[in-house]
Image 1: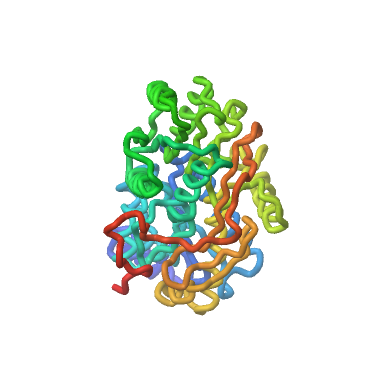
Image 2: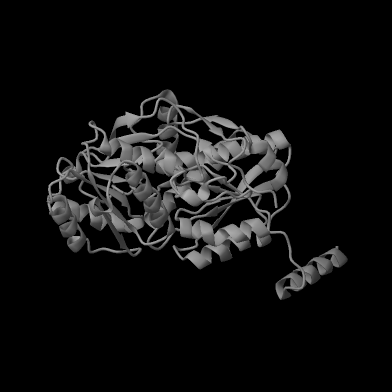
Length: 421
């Protein structure tokens, strides 16, 4: 007994000195990583995705786990700091030895971690709409590509039902997702006969809070005779002052409709939505969608939020599109691990091809056999006075993603599947 105790003490001392490393937990669990900002400008959107992972893991564990093992969540906070995302991703893969990571919101955070996942052959599930123009064997994109959100939204604005817009304001946060999405949209608008003189493009930094001047410019641009619409790719907590200023200046949806790609139920929580009634958002899911699967999803979240005392949600539980995409991604990963009978990255990647899951949005989502993107329905919703959305337009069924936009000429001939490296 003394010898065994002495040996344990010696190993512990070596571990503390960094000469040897000890596993954090036994081999009886499968570790999953969460890489979402819990502080900083993006916490308004990302914190709830951490909670969604925790809820889904609890659900899976209550039903016996995966391959007979319980899932164990390892949470890190990259704090809306893009280089820190890469550092934390490396920690999850090399120190914590997670089998999979669910995380990132902004494209700049995803671009930051991409080399880390590729170099370490890790697995990332990315749950947010993005600009496309990327395919990696190590990433599964469960949010929308531009043809599953941005293009249908602008087509709707140009239609009679959407107000027959002839002029467009492309307003975004200054980073890769808004700039690339707007490059695609400008090319798309050109293809529809819209001239550059009828397109205004503006960007603001992360965390920007003074939208008085920009909304003044939008009013002036809209007052030049043609029906104008705003396409917003503002991300994070800047949405709160933007929408407040929209209300302050009386820019109503009947005059200049705004369609947002990063504003859902969660972002509207801190805003008086009464002046915003009729403004739009384009997503692949809304909480207000009526079907039994969504009713069960909302109840599960509501019960979990109340039981855990989650800030804001214990009194007013809200679900949104990236939460649904996170939920689908975890369940598909579980199915793929069980099909592969292994958490080995390459085996799970192979088993992910063609996975299906009945989504709360009301359709069966399918993981494309080649391009690592989900086939998803598209919904356009109008903001209601209670901060929910009334669906005013939807696709007849799921839409296959186009990671490489046909509206970017240099994409011609690019393969619709990740390269084997």
